[in-house]
Image (tube, rainbow, N blue to C red):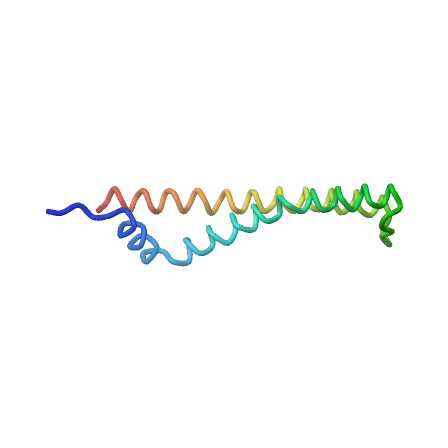
Length: 98
């Protein structure tokens, strides 16, 4: 019996639950992309302080946006964590069964 390559195992597991693979990929990609936004908000904050850029919301609007972003990321973290747990348990059960 020849050993099966890792990429073949991964492909077979992705075919078993494609919606779970896709959701897992999308949520964690979104988490990684959203980690860039606080830096952009900080840049806008400092640009507003120096007078280089005037935003309609002002400093209070930027701070509110930063707080809203933090709450959104916390909720997304919970959802992505739930999907991660289901993903890992589903795939580990599949590997153990087969």
